[in-house]
Image (cartoon, rainbow, N blue to C red; front, top):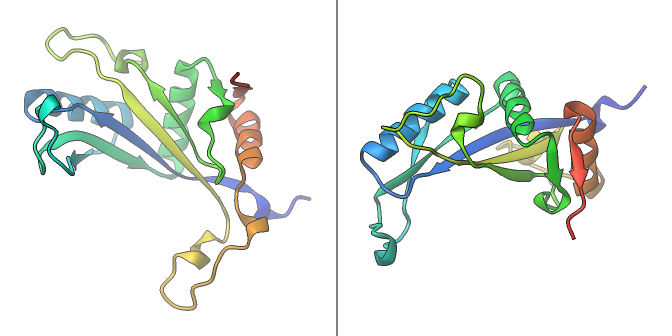
Length: 172
């Protein structure tokens, strides 16, 4: 039997939708993100002024949702199926996380195109962990996670292939 502490788990899935402006377009994006994930999004705020893009510092320019547990797994299954369960090896980082994009929200089941709203894309970032990571986060008696217990890039790829049937494509 495999050691339960070595099991790779989904820590969180962050879905980010950068709209680029506040107002009606941002409200539409928030509504779409809430429909897709089943959770209320949080607005993201610009850190600095970018005059070529018409963005001011402190202006709301996007929204995001953080999913955990069953919601994260269900969303990840839907999102990976949109990309035909394919993901490139360069989308993985060395700490076991990976990210990918979805070009159109209409690819999700039950979502239809509305010309008044338009089409929105989103970025999906997945963070993986092993049991025992709380040791590095707690307030009292905090410890570092040993290197051998951290999730590596290869661990993340194997996890995705095993749990979601995803094919990892080598990027050239």
